[in-house]
Length: 308
Image 1 (cartoon, rainbow, N blue to C red):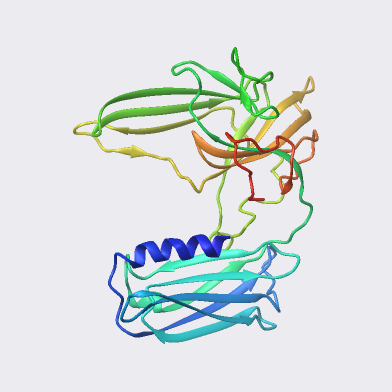
Image 2 (tube, helix red, strand yellow):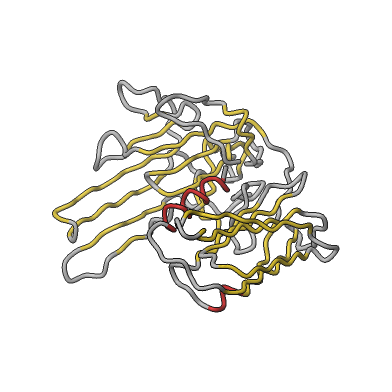
């Protein structure tokens, strides 16, 4: 599926750009697992697109092979490609994809690539509450709770019952150069919270974007985000569609403030357009989702969540 999407994007872009001159490119893969150990026998594929003259249609090609005992695979070619896409896969691991576009910022360094990529093991995918959210809170300027197990807002005429995460959005727009959007994320219980997961370069492109487990601690009770522009002032925008958050909700603490019970989960994307995942079992920090076991299900307003 990722390859098809990338190919469609490359075709749409390729129709608007001129083909490069013929050139040699070379890719050197180094594939490791999460402990840094080399993976032998992983299938590495390089997809390259060329303009097939004279009709300028896309002429896709590919080079495939297996990594050696050092986890290394090399590929090279002489063509007019304007972009390369890479896919690495092996049984028992999540696949990893990577893309390099030549037509946007072309540099000689891109013709001789050294890629260190990680394959994450398929450990224990589980059923989770998972849903894509693409809407603002029903009311702006006030805190509104969202029920992660039901998948809806906790307001009249909606289905939410328990407020797991509370969103408050402020919105102001005078023009395309004068606007301000703020989102404040809070939680109803002591011990609840959220943190950013910083993806390393090696694991970028993995089908499993998050860690297998949520951390024990490090959760903050408040997260504030802003996107704004005002005449004479620097533009602010900390939105990141590739961001990953980890969270803890429905937390119960003992008299000493220690966590007795809690539910853990993750978020792909940023507010207010994101996909969340919630482990249904208290104190289980596993956040490796099985897309075939969504406890919320599928509806026309909520497309199927396919990423683990």
